[in-house]
Length: 114
Length: 113
Image 1 (cartoon, one colour):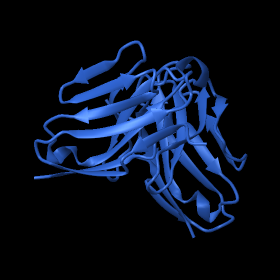
Image 2 (cartoon, rainbow over the protein chains, first blue to last red):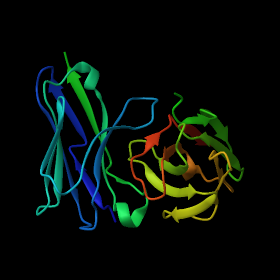
Image 3 (tube, rainbow over the protein chains, first blue to last red):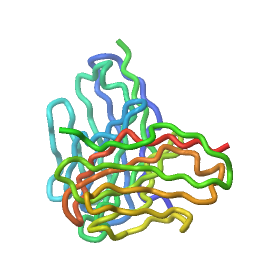
Image 4 (tube, each protein chain N blue to C red):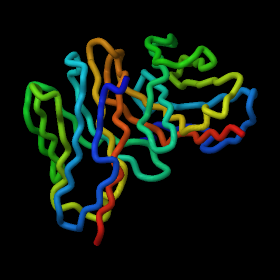
């Protein structure tokens, strides 16, 4: 049973455009929602994370939007750059119950064209 | 400040063999988690070690075992390798039991022939 569903599988955006990646979760006990960025040959690196007490979090060009009632959250990359080309993973966990057990989506491969 | 270091970076084994992967956590971290990332998929949780004990385990058979040493480093052992064990094995460290802000290493790429 896939607990975190991520879409799209791949995304091509022009430089300067907005990249949007969506995730949906099933377990209402999840209370921590991070996004990870992974470049080829590297491990995932934490990009930005949100907890369900807020609906939006922004860090530079990266914004997470969170809809608790719909059990959905999304990553928006503003002014996308070729250096943003990577695979992005959403994840979720129950901080109190899972003790670091992150459930990952299947990933979105983003290509930003110059 | 060194991050999470893993060794070896690549290795090739044959079916039925055993493999040991190693991980040194980020300085100041005391908890180590292991994940398996199949090609084109997201990482899947294998298990987590804290205070030298396995604290939580994902849906993996007991062919997968681990160990944490007093210096917080960790090993992942896989016995009776199957073709389906071919994957990138990621080690992640964090501070404190229950913390879920993870720092990942670059992984060990295992190919089973």
